[in-house]
Image 1: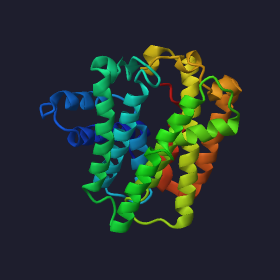
Image 2: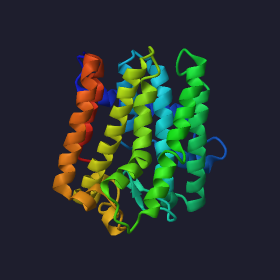
Image 3: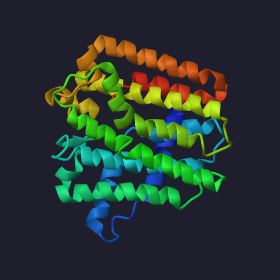
Image 4: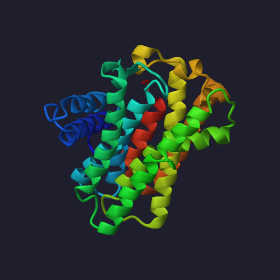
Length: 298
């Protein structure tokens, strides 16, 4: 068990990730300068870095090398950042604020924002293709494929398509879960699965357990996000509060109410913690991070 507190560990990983992203992104003075400046604007200096935290927490289970974890963490964060840039555009959610500052299409322009998203996505795959993620080249390729699936039409992008098609509709709980397993959950699920493949191999049963944890934590993150959108203010969130209700989007709060949504979040948290228990101390950070996600205030 680590002697560092969870907050110290989290701060260390966030700093590692910021430095890794800074190295991964093209310098602002490299042509085309405006695009590279906008890419750095979209990625650096903001965000909780939940996906990189999950990568490193899962990596603890397998004694993974931090440099490998940084690669996966950076790639996931680049894809996450691209998705936020595109989601905020007028053709999607049309938002003006993200991470406490103007969204990319507001600070720059819509065409630049579109290119920023495109470039960040391709950079993510370049980043994981250029360095070894594990000792087995075949598994390395499988990990890149897994990242692609989690990002595409069977993952995050598909979830966003379902989200856009669901505006004004009343979804039941299973339909809402299906949407968020893809939109929010796919990258969170991949963060745990990919982090756990960067070190010593785990058996099929252990990987299946971690996949279940990733699925639960992904949904848990979204439940809490819906609660915060309904209850927190814009200054606290760093993005426009109450946007889901204003846009008539189906959420866990609109379906269940705040009280039941909180109960569901706690049930999901306990499910994930119980699944992690057999891993013992090696799952310390994953367990702590699960508790953090359910209790986060922003």
